[in-house]
Structure formats: C-alpha cells, structure tokens
Image 1: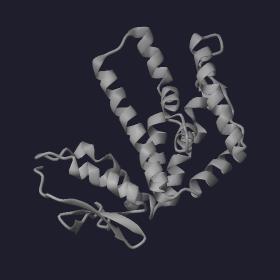
Image 2: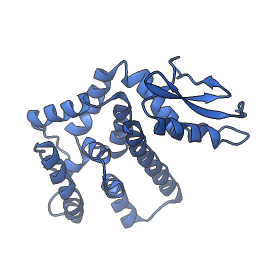
Image 3: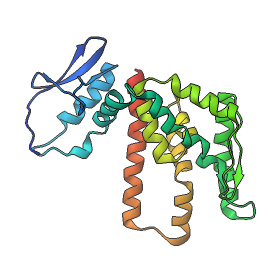
Image 4: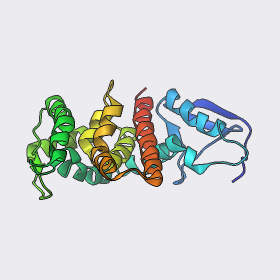
Length: 231
C-alpha cells in the first residue's frame, strides 16, 4: 500500500490520546476510535506511522496492532482472554525440566530456578517442578493468584501478556517481563533456552536465527508497549 497521508499528530481525546493522520482519527479494525491511555503510547504509535516511506510496511506497526487488540478484544472480552492465558501458567515452560541425569536439566536448573523462585516470592505462590513431559497439575491456590493478577490487569497490559505468554510459552516469564526494572534480556534467554541448547548442539541455521530475531523484537516491543500504556 502506498503512503496516503502527510502529517501525523497526537491529540488528547476524552480520557486518552489519539493518533491523527492529516487531522483524521484512526479507527481499529472493529470500528472503534483508536484511543490509548497515555500520551507516551500514542506518540510511539505515531512514530510508527511517521517512519513509513512511500510504501507502507504493515509489519512495522507492532504498537498499533497491540492497541487494536486491546481495544477490540481484551476490552470487551477480557474474561475470555484470561481463560486463554491461564494455560500458559498450567504448563509453564519454567516448570518442565529434562530428566535429572541430562545435561540440559542442569542448565535449566541454573537458569530457570532463580527466576521461578523470584516469581514465587513476589506472588506468594508455589509451582510444581516436573522432570520429563508428563503433565502435573499446578496447585489451585497458585492458579487462583495468577488469575487474580490477570483480572487486575488493564486491557492494554492483557494484550501485551497475550503476546509475551505465547512467545515464551510461559506466563511466569510474561508477568515478570512487565514488572518495572525487569531484566528483559535474561527473561528472553530463559524463554529461548531449549532452542538455543539445540542450536549449540546441532548448529545454527540462518532461517532459524532470523526467526529468533523477529521473536525477540516482538517480545521487547510487547514489554515496551505495556510500560508505555502504564505511563
């Protein structure tokens, strides 16, 4: 698609902020006014539009797409979004380790255990650790606390958590990543630990490395989106 606008501006709109293209407000795919909670987020979204060249690159609108999801989906259907997020805690990557005699198990313990303990301490919960692939149910009390965390989140945070949980296959990593001062690089390294382990064993492929780069960019952008939406 060719660029169809010249000027990108940000204006207050009700209790939020809105991006204008040549003075016209943007709408979501669902037809709602694309109003976001903070000026910082609106300006980041405006920068996506302003940074386009003569041809529009649809893949460059990460913040816009997350905002659209927050407005069209997590806002009106937050209960369903929470139901879809909870399985990432029930089968959280950080809880499923290789067999104890395997070298991978030791690496997982070194990297994952401190992060899982930190999350348990912050949330006041306990997660079951599992060796092998057999599913083990997490404590009901733990899942209740996780649910309460999600229910307290605003639609924009839930939109970010949806992407983060999917990328990491871990709701623990997702929730820790949006905490102020989070070590995002370390959390992403945990999410990628098993894939990197296999790459170290069998070698790296250009296509796989490019895919990991795109996934990392999406992870970092989702963390920033959550922070900008909080202000």
